Length: 267
Image (cartoon, rainbow, N blue to C red; front, side, top):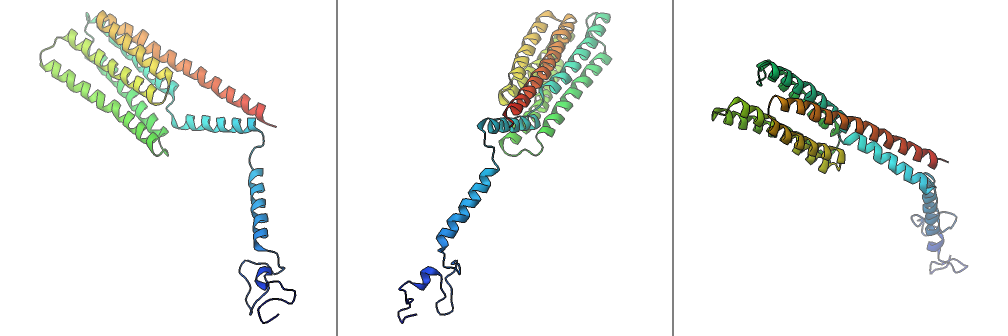
């Protein structure tokens, strides 16, 4: 090596990775291969290895994305058939009890009938809250906040309904007025929250059922007890059960379509 630090062939020892004063250029190989070329080759190998893990067919990639979206939707969104079924059973059984008791008591159901009806409604509300709460477990961010606020809306609204009815009763309202008002307010809360839930989760079945319940409650208020209870049982509870059945059919068809798409996309 010459006094100027170059090799006899004129090449710079730093460029070829040759030791200079006992030191080797960091990152340079001993065989003199430039580090830039070696790094480019390494990056290219990594890129190829990462690409091999991805589906090569666009149809297969689309099927995979749809499958994942369907799985997330089922795990986080409330189940319409379950909620509709719970409220359908509660309304159908509860209003039938009120109607039968009202016809025997000349329009005014007995106290035990209201107790049974209230127990069924509370059970449906508890089921709704637990179901939504379980679906929100593990979910963070805006979705979790929406589910929590929606669940608390049920409790707050029905607590206010109870306070309103208590005030009206203390004001001297008749039994017939109390029956019409209690049924109308409760149904209006259910209808409004179902429409709100349908808007939040973009679930048209839920929104349409809320509209139907509001219309049925308005008709029942005009009809008056005890015939209004029969209307609520058949049209209200029956509407919930029909919505549950329709939800089962739609969800099954959606799952079958996703499975067929995945089968077609598979190599």
